[in-house]
Amino acid sequence: MSADLPIALVLIVGALPILALRGSARGAYLVVLSAVAFVYLLTLPHGVFGRFTLLGEQLVLMRVDRLSLLFGYVFLIATLLNVLYAWHLEDRVQHLAGLVYAGSTLGAVFAGDLLTLFVFWELTAVSSVLLIWSRRTQRAYRAGMRYVTIQLLSGMLLLAGTLLYAADGGSLQFGRIGLDHPGGALILAAIGIKCSFPLLHNWLQDAYPEATETGTVMLSAFTTKLGIYALARCFPGTELLIWIGVTMTAFPIFYAVIENDLRRVLAYSMTNQLGFMVVGVGLGTEMALNGAVAHAFADILFKGLLFMSMGAVLLRTGTVKGSELGGLYKSMPWTTGFCIVGAASISAFPLFSGFVTKSMIMTAAAQQGHTLSWLVLLFASAGVFHHAGIKIPYFAFFAHDSGIRCREAPPNMLIAMGLAAALCVGIGTVPGVLYSVLPYAVDYVPYTATHVIDQLQLLVFSALAFAVLMRTGIYPPEMKSVNLDFDWTYRKLAPSLLCGIAAAWSRAGQAIGQCLRSPLEAAAGAIVGLHRPEGGMARTLSTGVTAFWAAVLLGAFLALAFF
Image (cartoon, rainbow, N blue to C red; front, top):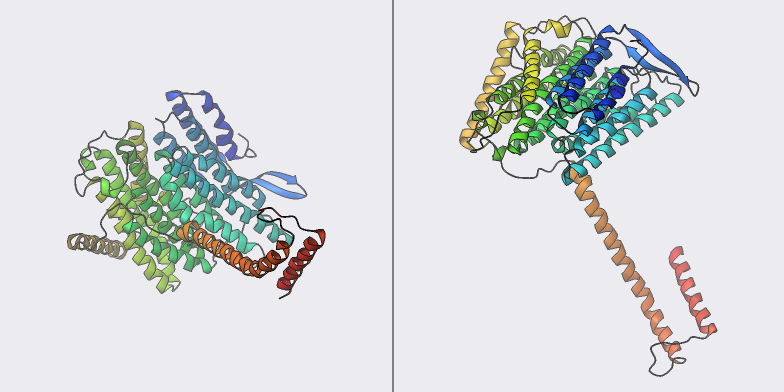
């Protein structure tokens, strides 16, 4: 293939034949197509390809460098894993939407200019919402509508920021932008929506748990990580991002601990992990940026593995409520084991992927003297072990025995989870392979005695705290509940306030109108009585009287308008 062919088209155009394929033939075709795209990616040379001119502006369809290649590798690995995980599905819409979603994400990653980025940015929103609507429930439909509205708003902000940036003399090149130019803030807001910034994050926890079993896994891999990639391209070293990221790592912990829906727990955990990456981009050093993108790579795998395990549970039991599960290790031992691997990886156990990626960010923060940020990241590391490392496997597969007895996950799901688990362990035990494809040369050794002992101490004391809280009854119990997040302010509170204000305004208007009408009606009644037939409900006014009262009403209106 020519390097001028955008890799996005390999998946987007290649997805069309699946509409005519069925069963194993369709699954095999999807696997082969994903493999072909990955081989094509391996053959791409570094450079800029696919240049063309539109409306006097030079656009670039393919910009290949170490950063775009890193995300290209992991996105295609995720595509292959998702194709295997969804092999059993007969829903062609999900297969088609998933491939278009993956292809448009790759198109955005390799885009060389902001307009090309915008096109693929919006295509990811339109294609991914089908993975939510495919669940075919009323809740999924409403969540999908909110999701696509927010995602399209992100695209509009990106386009508006691009136009303002270009009008101020900035280049359309998809590169470092910063906040020194008009439009930079709008572009940051657009990316911030994708990255689940605080107060912009609720679309994630709202929509992801409402998608299908396989759709949530696909969603977890692409949208937010595309945001991290764009952030690393446009705003490296922006100090504001350090504080945004630190906030992201901390506040989701409290929601995740009290949340009953285990897929929603993972959605809060995703915002927590994204916070580490945002901090790394904000720090801006080579080690910090390496840590941010390496952690994004690892997160796609271990978070995908956790969502896969919960998807398998949902498929077999029909629920992922912590209050309704427990004891599933007896029926789903393989799924239990793979879930524990994902939990160990996200918790940064030694020999698992999170240990060799997250620590780069924390080390970079400590070396630059961001002591407060480092302490919050340390707290967040302990918190993620509580809500994702312990809570997810404990309440789903252990805890009390719910009495549910079901079949193990389908073979294709187990194969996908097994491959993801192997990658999590492989990265953790041989980190040099991942380090070799990072954007900058790596001068970091994760397996030092100090680092290993410190991390094990953190994990042991976190586990001890969980045990004590459970034994004393302080830990929030799993129960059916609705947790209010910031989206309550604009989904419930704001509409209620507006309706209340509108009703009060209407009542006030009616009262004022009544006060004005009462004396006028009394006078009118006296005059009209002279011309009204005795006992009649209808009355006829002379032209002079009608004109008089029209003048009175007009004068009253003008007086009110003046005062």
